[in-house]
Figure 1 (cartoon, rainbow, N blue to C red):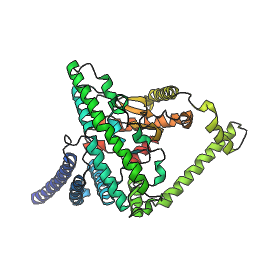
Figure 2 (tube, rainbow, N blue to C red):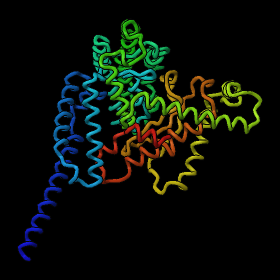
Figure 3 (cartoon, one colour):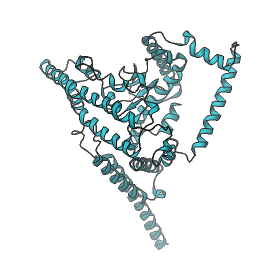
Figure 4 (cartoon, rainbow, N blue to C red):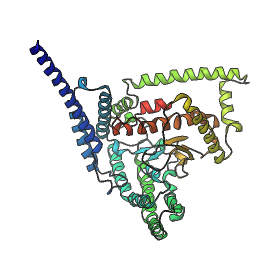
Length: 435
């Protein structure tokens, strides 16, 4: 009996030891992933976009993928299994991104590599913050040079965006080509430096900012304008289908898998969309009938699009209505959620510099450690395209109980989940939550 007990005890101890070693292996891989830096952020405040950096990351991600593949899932806790699955998902996507040459196409219809800099334009909180922002502005010329090099490689191999999406794209760079620093959007934070900066230092910072805007920022946007208008627009593709690009069909399948996490085909997803549109239209018809509206479905849609009562008369009015809706949504949160985030959010207009090509609204997160709030941006440009009846759904989606609630809670919440999970935005879940 003692001998049997001894064997069972040793077997159980060995099983626990093996399980512990597996957990240690996963924890180490997560630590390695979270601590990996492919470039010195002090040297590249806006990021390093060299081929060397991308190659270095590709090799690292392949190494992590191989090590992850050797871990047995059966010995992991439920929480560790989630971490394993999400890390493998992220690593696979980064490897796919490199192999599909995504780095050569950093442009969307409403944005581009040059527009992402705008998210750094915020009120400055002190000396360190002001110096950090100055260094960021000084990094713009290299940032632009590296991205133009990548985009040119994309054009050369047939990886680019279709011409049709670039209507009005000039607004994404023309607004930053000012006569001098005075009216430049990137100079805005220096116009109201905080009182905690000494006057003598303020003067030095302002002089350096003026010089940087004139000699680095404005010339960089002139270079962007020249590249797009004298090169990119003339040489990018006419065909709108991604399948017209090298390996485009496989890339599209890959993106479906990434954004939905499901094994569905493009046709199956399209059919789901058609079915949902049909359901929504049927609900709309019931509502129209209940309103005793005189006219058919098309007449009602035209009524919604043209009657002045559905549109704000000024940007200020649109913003005030969005703020009112947001506060009414805030009021309801305790009825449905026991835990709410500490980080607040503000409601602000989309910056004029990007508004013409921007979406109707968007959530702008802020780090838990930062001294700034998150924001729900509302686009007040072109008021005739911003009907008021879209604001309740837009506000609930972008602010609360949508993106702000989910993202802020994820960052502030469970201390037992790894940092990479707090920072990861999974589109299928995030947009599903927002919906």
